[in-house]
Amino acid sequence: MPDNGKNNIVKQLQEVVARDFSKDISTSLIPSKNFEKLEEFREYLIEKVSELLDKNFDLLVNTLYRIDVSEQKLSELFSSSNRENIPEKLADLIIERQFQKIYFRQKYKEGNL
Image (tube, rainbow, N blue to C red):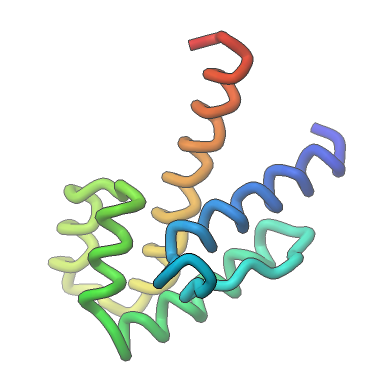
């Protein structure tokens, strides 16, 4: 995939995440920034998820439900004895689910679904 294709996907990912983490029409808990690389965005998302874990767990869980992150994966993650990497794993689950949504929306637009 050319770099501009990768940048476009990362941009779409950032927009979808910002929208899904919206508190209201004008405010997002995870504001969209202009990251060019997925890893940069992932690190930013980890930081924001960690803040929500500490400050507003109920809102985080509600948002994960709206995003449609697998309840089974969340249950496994939160019941695990290894709780050190929860923000990283949550960020990965969010990214994974959002990529799935972007993929299926694109396929639907192309008439391939």
